Image (cartoon, rainbow, N blue to C red; front, side, top):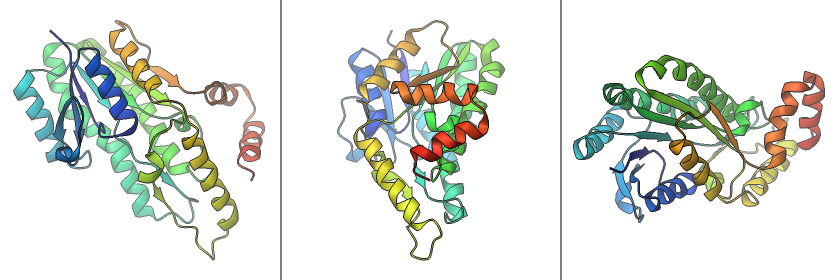
Amino acid sequence: MSKIVFITGASSGIGKSIATYLHEKGYTVYGTSRKPDKINVPFNMVALDVTNEVSIENAVAEVIAKEGKIDVLINNAGKGITGPIEDTPTVEMRENFNTNFFGVIDVVKAVLPYMRKQQSGTIINTTSIAGYMGLPFRGIYSASKGALELVTEALSMEVKSFGVKVVNVAPGDFATNIAAGRYHTPVFEDSAYKEKYAENLALMNDHVNSGADPILMAKAIHHIIENKSPKVHYKVGGFMEKFSIVLKRILPDKVYEKLLMNHYKL
């Protein structure tokens, strides 16, 4: 029997690439979107809003009713946010965490009872290489993904005895439409960060536009699912993106900070 895959945020970008690739590999894939009727994809779609607990419960119940199980949960839904910490509305920070952090936890909570009952399952949380470091003008995004990295580590230990594997996958920049869905704090005319933030907004968008093909993430996810003993952490991206994590581990804080500031022209 094919494995049943449940993936959030499958209507576009990395999520759509992963879902399509797994579907082509013979998995039974259920992708999610807030408005699934408007999405034309070769796999199954169900309605889901990760910030709404009732919506989550209904989506999981729908898949369980049809298939009787969920073998793989891929928490891919996420939201970008940019802006100086001082200028970014706190309400938008909370909204970002509701999607990137609490939304993931609520989906995990809804699926885990079924995985514990079947004594098997794989949970894959999509984080970000940005979650390994505090990036200027992306501090809230870094924080939400970094928090998810740590919670995933804890969850992995808590559910291991039930036969459930929990994995983090941290992508770098990929060529998707994520920039269009980000919350961008406006470049305020009276902001102390006006010029530097405006320059970095353009730089961030360039990184996405020149990013890697999302198929690399799809192949990485497929490898993890097929691995009987996956690692807790995976990084998928360019050499320098992954090497930046190594540098943070080995360099003094001030030296690493200076490298980042030079990169972002601060």
